[in-house]
Length: 352
Image (cartoon, rainbow, N blue to C red; front, side):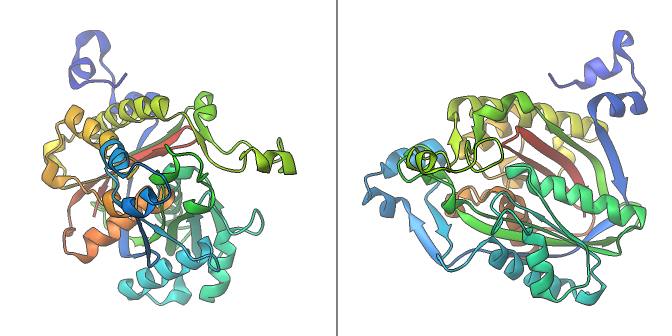
């Protein structure tokens, strides 16, 4: 249950900012700015009509998810290829000498292979001399990576940090699963972080997890507990399994509670926010959260109708499209929230 302004100020439940932050896992992180953005979407478009020819109900897909199309990566390419394209576009826009980049973090749950990390492949292809690592928090991965990189920059451990969210989801969804297969698409987005002034960065942020919900969304086989076998492959255990109804209810509750907490900690309201970018999972989740929080629809960014759920690529793709279209200006307050398997989430109020 989110703490409301009334309970925060009540005599029976008075808390200092420090105690509130400690209890809620909320923090402030200033002095970091986004210097550039980039994104990449594969050329192949798979529409609902295309899926209808394979036996899917195109009307059901649109009504239940808001998705009309999604992108599919060619078979000869992988997640690192998308990450590299997004990163190159980001670096070019930032006008920063790429050789000064000294940290690379890639958020993904679909690396090219278990080892090495996708980040190391990106580092090599970009020709950079920088430490590189992957972060796997599924659809919350970009938020985890963004906060981690921001902490490096703010603490002086990195001068320029490249953060990429990329996933090739079409490789891990089961074509026989009519309720899950149409939801996902492939894509990547990137941001480059550097030192900012005292007003830039996170006015408030939080990361969290509810591991007791791990069974609601995950891939059963392919890890150390259940290695892939011929039998598990035949039964489709290498694909995403999702309890859609339970995840839906959790996501709506999570969005409303967490965003309320972030705004309260930042001493802001939804009216102070210039742009709202939520993980593009399902239009009904976004609509329900927007209604619950009374978010002005003109501030709400939605592109899942064209791309579907791109997992860790979702938020940075939105950021790049808004940035390049001129919808983000210095000083803007941008509300971000990613959520997904884990169950994990990250939310923040970012001042540009």
